Length: 284
Image (cartoon, helix red, strand yellow):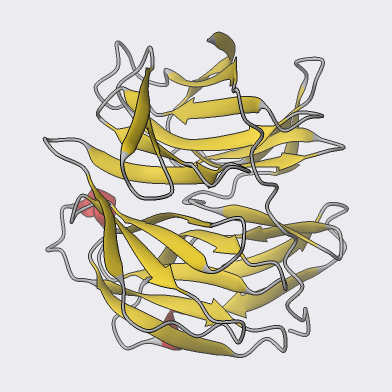
């Protein structure tokens, strides 16, 4: 496992871009950055804090999470608001999200401030359709986190970082879901955070405060565990020319010092699935 960059508070939202490399955020200190193949780091969006999830958009730019779900073009000439907390009467913001093959955005809302010690209240799962309309498709997610689709697009995996489990939803071709089942339960004091799905259907999950990445078979059984140098593993992302580079990002909590959040890279035996670009309308 190779260390690529360090000195961050809480790295989140890693997403691969063929031109820019690994794009990632620092939730605590702010800013969205890109780390290219030469190890050079550039600013993509300055200062923005609280970004827990990102995805590419077909128009050229990023869909970005936080208090709202927004779009920001790479050249900073175009921006749009895609979803606001008034989607429900309890939402205060949004965390991680993913896209399906058609370009819809599947996003979880938060109902309490995670870092403020507020009483936990469950949030919801929403879909932003291609026409920009939003609908709520599930509830009861205490702390919404990583999401990813199976290779055939028929299953959505969704981490709940306070229930310490990974949900699995059956998804129809019309992007409807009916209930959910437990895909995997995380035992002990560790919690599931961000995730990525590989071409063979395996599910790769960052285990916050567990110092590892857990890899699950499509049936939910454990394939392997990958230990990491830091305990606060926040997310994972596949990238590289063959999608076999596994990027593991971390935060500073329970680390040896402040701002020790680090990006690691290792080679995986199986390529990851690229994140489909969002295609939701950008009319603001």
